[in-house]
Image 1 (cartoon, rainbow, N blue to C red):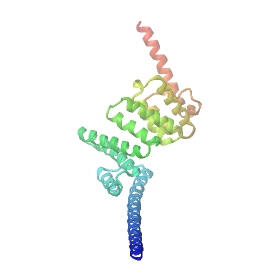
Image 2 (cartoon, rainbow, N blue to C red):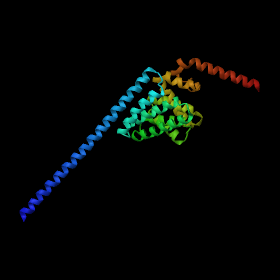
Image 3 (tube, rainbow, N blue to C red):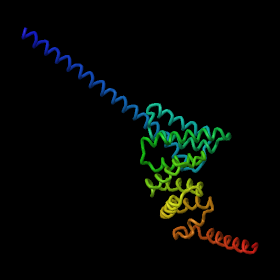
Image 4 (spheres, helix red, strand yellow):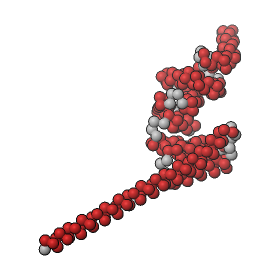
Length: 250
């Protein structure tokens, strides 16, 4: 009986060992499958991003058909990995590109909402990404949602990416569009963005400032003197002329 019991114990131990091996094999198989899915998802994103980068290098706007084609890559990537932040961010950027091409206001709003949703999902994976915060602020601006989330997104984008040119340009563009709604602290922060941007990205930063005719924000900054000088002098002359006219009417 002792021998039988020992035999049963050995059999039981052997059985548990086999079960453990099977479990470990299944776990390793699942890990391998997940790694393969992530690899395929990442490869598809790389293909899509290569197309987008090629567009940027040619400075040529693409039509809706081509945008939809590349958006299909990001959609395929998300089918393998639904929370892939790169795919979500790239897809959202194409949503905003669709907005510019939309002929029906309802479609433009729908594309913008899709972009906002995808930026938010990507932000859950990358909460310290300044560009994602800036992109959320921009999408909310397009939806005329200048609420607490909008202001928070601008602040976080500025704090997390003070020296990133793309983030600086996005924050500046969005902030100037909603300038009258910003509090004094946030306005001062945007002034800091302009000052920092002058060191490495002055021409592009000035293009944004000039599009809003906010010469008062750059005319006192030395780094902008060369490119902003003529516009600043005209703006100052117009201001003095306006003051004289106002005094004359009184």
